[in-house]
Length: 343
Length: 251
Image (cartoon, rainbow over all chains, first blue to last red; front, top):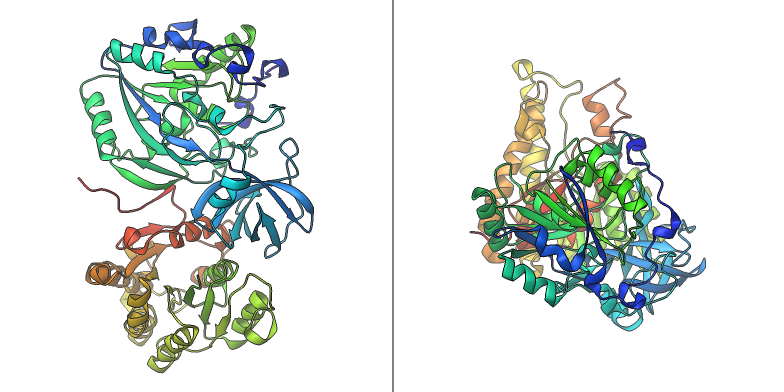
């Protein structure tokens, strides 16, 4: 698949720049676009259960968001260090930026010393093939520095800082994500209750997200480098997913992170309990095996997430849905609206 | 906490990449390779002159000892150097002998050459592990044996090298079972095709510039060294694979 197939125009005004709570709405008041092969329906997230049925299995990511953005300084002066993925207590993959709204690259040399949230550290090496990301070795656990000096990672389109609670979901249980697994953000107790009454089941996986997927740069999107993320699919979740599939019930992922975890646990016939790091890249050339539906947000042009949506629903249906979403003024990004795709 | 790693075949290619990574994480290192000059150049690049890092840097110490890993006296010297550094957390058996280049078919493989391949790729790693076991047990350490897809496929010409790596894979698996109760982890790693001197020897005169440089395996090594040794012990990893798993809960 060519990069050009992932390009579309999204007007800048369709960015959610504040959480819905700041716009006088509840989390579950965001809009919900429902896409099926039969067409597109406009609804609100609080009505989610109307589009699901008894026996459907929703799978959520229980990773909680870290205050992963730390103030840092070095020979280049002050900068922002966004921690992406923990490899061991004193080793993180990071994205150094000049500031939340000003990305790198910074002039960095392997071995140079820096200060991160009050801790001495040094650049180890860039991530092969992704020069914006650097491994950092620190003299103590940077989770402690985060607890004292960290804030949630934020980019330029969100002008104001919000507390960490704004970046957690109702499923958040295991801290480890650099960025909120945002597809689950609109879930409320009321929505969970309506799903329960409808006979919809919920299972959980863990996948700790790294910093936002970078724009695809290669012309053949299959050649793009993705960095790995920690994931875990428990035996109880593997059993629940396999039982649903065996009995012809639908499995619906809450977020692209859940698709990545479940597909990483797929052995060709069923889902196995698995734990590790995965850099699985799901695009139309690879296909998707485990889920029949995906509840997600709206994704930017030329991203790997968009390629995953194409793998689930086909390019034409997704492009049609995005034209509909742009025409109807749906909002993009982590505080924006929702999209349920059911095949 | 100070950590110590011993790397064979450290002067070039994959071994040098791993040595550099560990040095920048403040590991103390014992490095060996046959060529003294290249090995000393690497040591100097890691920490500067004199074998000790300048004060205030986040680097470990480096001991560079050139020699033949198949020589038992050299094996003792390497483990002795680790002992002087105080401990041994990671032993990486990376030094390998490809055998004659171009690679001969087994039908007329020189048997003395095969004995040499087995001595370096199979007997020497086990000798080093045996020598290092007391230190590895004391630290709950990790042994990494570098393998190859040639151990599994049966590529024409690769029978000598491949059979040595296949036997090394079985040593890895057996030791993982034997040493689990002692708290020592043992893994095999197939790094995949890389643009190295050894790969060029295997394909003399051919253009290998389409192969990735050994740096492509860096994320895997950083992941592996971050795992508890017993969570990975007995596994055979592909460093360039889509995912790396730990032994999780079993059914």
